[in-house]
Length: 120
Image 1 (tube, helix red, strand yellow):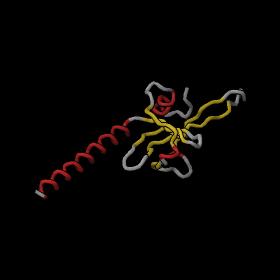
Image 2 (cartoon, rainbow, N blue to C red; image 1 turned 180 degrees about the vertical axis):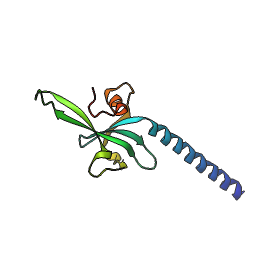
Image 3 (tube, rainbow, N blue to C red; image 1 turned 30 degrees about the vertical axis):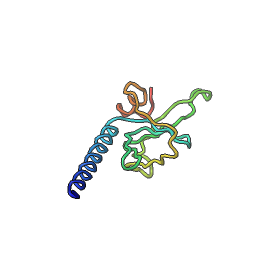
Image 4 (spheres, rainbow, N blue to C red; image 1 turned 90 degrees about the vertical axis):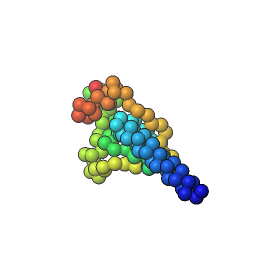
């Protein structure tokens, strides 16, 4: 009888691990936007298991337009080119205001795919 319960528990654990890896893999294939309570906006491949992690990450920066100081312009800064150049960043779930998948037709997504730093 004990072997039967052990087998059921092992099967449930294996199923949980497989489902977790599947959903983690699904999330990593698409870009997501993450807005933090600090006001920073990150774009990257988001995974939830085992930690909230962002890979292939970009920081969305709001800059003043040099030609018109009343307007803002946006720039995507890849974290791989930062001084500290992280491979991935671990996010504090308590600091995340919202996150969501990016639309492939968005300007930011197109800028990432085209390798440009300014979404047009």
